[in-house]
Structures are given as structure tokens and as C-alpha cells.
Length: 173
Image (cartoon, rainbow, N blue to C red; front, side, top):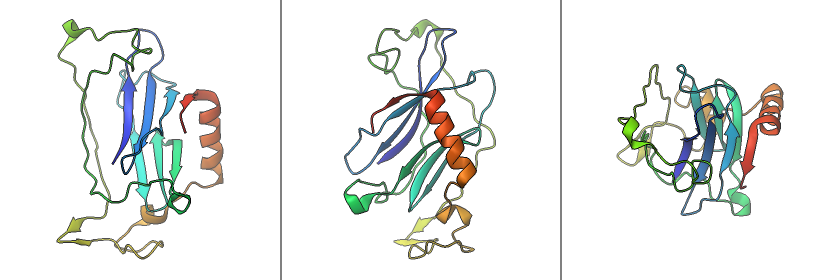
């Protein structure tokens, strides 16, 4: 299982593309792509993921970009059967990710780096087969925090629609 923020390569001066993916229980094909309204290399930016039993919401600078609801009741796999790990990597996908493979990686510009600051995580901790969260509850509690049942309010839903109408360039879903 994996949930991704992926930054696709571009030609200098072209908008950056953010690729958001949910892969669960051996099933992918849930990609969405967005143009970013800023240059993500010019400064630090905030990328957040809210992942609870009901939904996964991807945020950029506090703006919801995508909501992936838990629809297991109608047969859509939802990532919940594996412990979460966080990885950050740079990988060569210039056969498809850079304008459909038209732009190749310029390896003379290596090394490629990414920097992080103010990282934080609030999560259920699995230890010896038990969770620090009350998994039978969808309400907030001191052990779960508000994120455990958080959802988009009306204003955030409108912002999500606005972003998808104005910046989404690809929706495989």
C-alpha cells in the first residue's frame, strides 16, 4: 500500500505537476495530477496528508487537493492493512513522468537534493499487536486526536472543487 505526493519533471519555466496516487491491496489506477500555482523549488511549502479510517485527504499549503473516501463497502480497496512508513526518494521516471517521456533527466545536474523542515506526525502507534488508538471508535478521544474522524467542512469542500476545476489536469479515477 502507498499514498503518494510525486513531483513530475518539467522543462525550465513550465508549471510543475503534482501527481497524487493511492495504491491499495495490489490495486492502483487512482492517480490524479495537478499543476501547482507556485514553483515548489523556490521555497519551503507545506504538504500534508490526513489519513483516517474514513478518508485520505491530500493538502498543499492547507488547500485540499484530493479526497479519497473509504468505499470498501462497494468494493474499492482502502489502505488499512499495513503499518504506515514514510519514505522520501528521488527516482528516474523520465520514460513517462516528464511530459510523457519527452524530457529526459539531465544527470550532469546531479546530485539532486530535497530538504525538509518542521516535519511532524500524529498517528496511531502499533506495538505488540495493539494500537494506541481506539480503532472501534470514530469519535475524537484523547488517544485518537481530532484527525481520527476529521472531514472537510463546507468551505474546504468548495476549495477542493475550485482546485480540481482550475488545476487538475489528469484524473484516472
